[in-house]
Image (cartoon, rainbow, N blue to C red; front, side):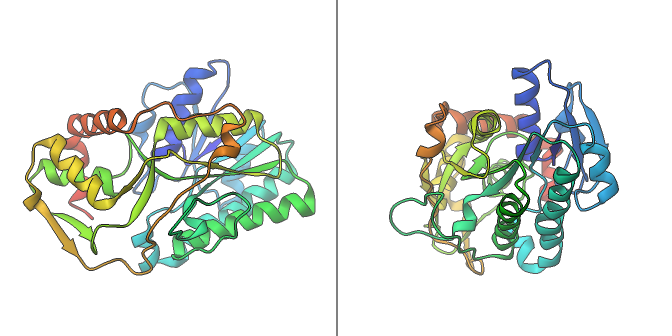
Length: 313
């Protein structure tokens, strides 16, 4: 059972699992908020349930016959968490707690909590390991950290079969265009200004979504219960580098770049040490340039449909 399976990373994971394990029966639970799209699941033979992970009835219906559960469902946009923290707490904390209770109730073999590198906070030198303290800066990362802490507490208290993955910034097809890469691709295609926060020097470690899906799959089948696994791409780029690369690939001028006031609580640099996950046999397969080219081409091909979403932001 995959929660949030109509969203960005979740839908890519559904496609990945369906192709790699054709004998698996897959159930997707998704609330279909603004970032969920049934188009993301076209062509798949799956069971779909529209519902909320924070609802006992919805989650029970999806989980009661499951062997394994992967929880991608979450509110994830930092900007929105600054203006509406309550919805993030409901989904990312209370929703997680609801799923954990159902893991206790049903005979679930493995529960994977999908988290983020943002729970660690900013790091100026080196890379975060799974044993480092978490120090979230935004309501979004704090809500994800809260979910992680609940997972850890339920493991210690109830001995349920849980694992946490924390990935770096994902990019690729099917991402709702509120995040930097799809937003800037679609705006550039329409010759609109690209709003870069502050000086544009905030650094993120970027991972192509398919590599993250492979990492989650590895942890799902080989990870040790009660552990945390970092999944990083090893592609540290600042926001200005990403912006200029997009403009270059689209043949657009750098005059489209527009610096805007920095975001509140904007972390300067994220970096993950993924050596623990690599010891399980996983390693990123995509070169950053190739993955970016594939991503740009996908958004160009789907620009007419997705640009409507950009206009609502």
